[in-house]
Length: 74
Image (tube, rainbow, N blue to C red; front, side):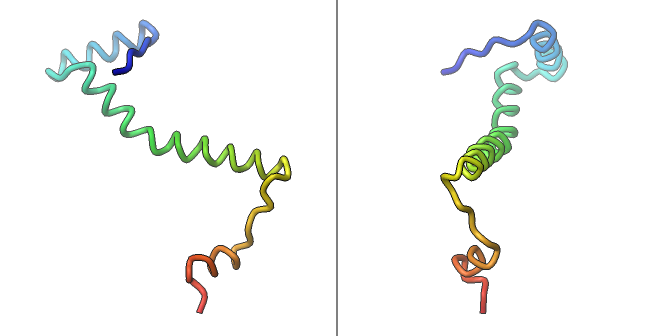
């Protein structure tokens, strides 16, 4: 279980939406997290990898290396 504190204006919008649709606030919070979690993972993992690259801890790969590893080259 997770407890989340929201700014008052967001809490009001969420409550209004729930009341207008007959759904719970929990339903909409769950939907928002599920919808956005994939994007957050991509962003933060990409930022981490980029930081490693700039710090010299990751040399990166060329397109040809990636294609070869994935079996995309004839």
